[in-house]
Length: 633
Image 1: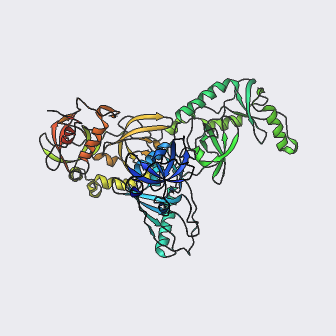
Image 2: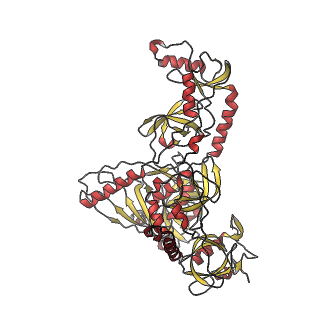
Image 3: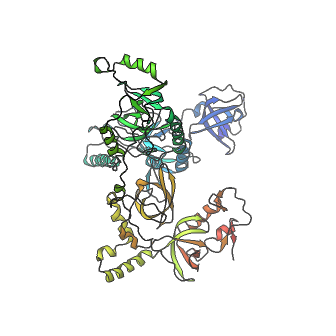
């Protein structure tokens, strides 16, 4: 490309859509093959650099006709799409956040790509359906699709694979020569199925894994309160709809303002729900419904039909068949009764005792959206009132039962640093700002185990249980975490177990309640120092025996440096604006992957230490040398 176009001169060409061209990338002084997407203006053209998969708008001065000998080589990039996922939020388009996250995670990464096609399928499917795996910062293999699902940016898309015993297991490497810039180096593997034992085991394991992912937690049976009927013989109302069974749904005029207010509050508070794991809906289950107008409403499941659900909008009366992805198993304002009241015409029986479609059509034409006077001709029976009391009355004795009571535990024991001036090996677990971090002692496990043995001698508790380390105790608890009772007390500093992003449960404590609808709690992982905002299903009561281990993470201030008087960095740390983001990333680079030692300078409560690397150099010196911090004598 460089030899062919380096000394070329621009000539006027009438460019049209889909024409091939050579494109000069001005900032990199490179030439790339491209294809015209559209003419933006007379002088600007949108082109696709199909060897690297980049779209950009360039001036026509940067375009040349592509020589015929350069058209013979196929495209050097492959257009792929992740299978088994779809955009979150009910839309069929990916959000900018999801695209940015995927770009940040994959651009420049070394990834393994597995083509998801059978021998019976057309292998020229475009874009190629693939699964992508790459290594995270810990070196662990990560499925990018599951990563997007865990981040709440995608939902699982079910796909039925047809397995045929005649298929053979083969691995074929597809080498794709890519230019270094803006590229993802890939290993492409095309996988078919083999009836031999190894492949059968793999398929069996995949099925078991998929089945386990669909196992649901126990669901709540609570629903929305029945409508409150006005305490008057005659009241004004608006007919919201007429059901197929002749039921007339009305909303009292006195309640219309409250309904509009609640609807507006739902939209403002329910900006984005968390990721919904695979869920099996049941008839009669209360839920939140995202309607065809993209607004959220209170609803109830009427019928489950395949991948769709027939739901009733409880505050409006009408029913609709919608995809399951538009439902969410939460209650919206459960203490407010339904606004829509179902009514029947008094002393009116349809011909044949069944409302015919033409009769329903007449009722809908006469009544829908009309203001009417409703005369209550038959009050509710005692049986109906008793049923309502049994279903909806709040029973406080249930809240006081031992199963829902969270025992009040003492706060975690604190780990302590050695005496001032003594050097000790440490690990940095969490960085808050360049001079504020959470550390733990490298010898904390040995310290814990020695204390446990001494406790065993005094108390006579089982030596096997007392001698296990915190990591071993947590592993044992994680195997039976489903049996632990849920957390019901959310006071500050309340100890608990919390689920981290890796799916494992760790010791934590309550920091604060961040949101009420839906309820989310800010917790701190006491052995690491990091915080997370979690929903209730990711919290549970902590077994008392885990409380005897001191909290590993120790919050310390780093001595020897301070924020610079002159800092040209424009991007500041939002919660600590005296430091720049550049300084934060530089400090993380100074700490990552190094053996560190700490010398305590000042005791609690504001524990201050100086951190050194394995060569006894202060770790903060690179920040001072880069002008991102000043020395603090």
